Image 1: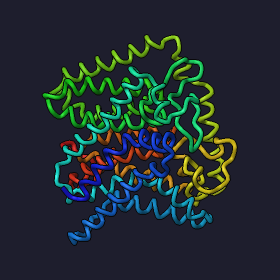
Image 2: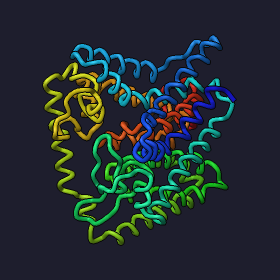
Image 3: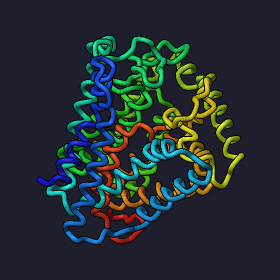
Image 4: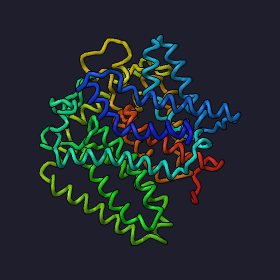
Length: 424
């Protein structure tokens, strides 16, 4: 057991319970700075990897992913300095924009100093994440969300105030439903975590014939939870990413696992059918959400207009997105003026067109690196990238950092070629 190993395990174990522990200690007991634990653990992990590399006198190998992320970070910093952004804005903006890339790259370079096989960290992720999801299921379906009031959550339903306690649940206007969030801080955040967890679950269960049946049943259950978050972008992301991965494996599945494939399709059809019958009279309100949809596009249009004022350098880090609230700048009364509800539009506002291009190149490099080792995990990252078209899902560091760290551990096993291989 090494310091790198201990810190990686601590980060993965803390993250799923980050919201629960932070809310309880901060909102219920008044203990400050508990929310910084995840950032402290990530920083300590990165420093431990750097120190281990120095002690081993190893020259770190930089590939496409490292250079593209470095270029992306350097551009955001340069553009922010050019636009006169303050150091506080730069710090909080870089933290949200880069944390998941940092987790991936640090874990990738940590591989030589990890005593266990990648599968051990996959099981660790599934165990702690499963415990958090199991507790959330108990809260939602057994104890009911009101129990969270005793742990610091707010009874102000469907309404969150920055810096305040998360509500015990969110609804959908006109649909009379409670969106699943478990012990997390919102349904969108729960969906973000579930996308990564679903990919990790499949990556562990499907390769083993003995576990495959339980794996498919568990996947159906996780898809049901994603559906109960009523996060439309997450549902669409599951379908698209699932289709991409299925097409990749289609020849092998058709030759060797035809029965399991039809069984999986049948189970998923059953889940979709149950969802349809349960909410048949409210599907319009659940999926169309005219007010929500028009609000999304209004915010994106505002962000686009902000981008056009400085299309090359943007307006600097933390000029758009959730980080704006912590940037030290006056916060407008209307959130729509700085929350474009699209990670990609946020990149345009913060760093101009070059930032978006460099982010996409970085994301593609990371995706390819994961795909070369575990396509099923890559499918989870692809789903997260798709979900961020209409959300700022990457802002929820607790939900994405452990998954990207796990992906980094597996990506370290990939061979030299920079394109996906059929036998990966």
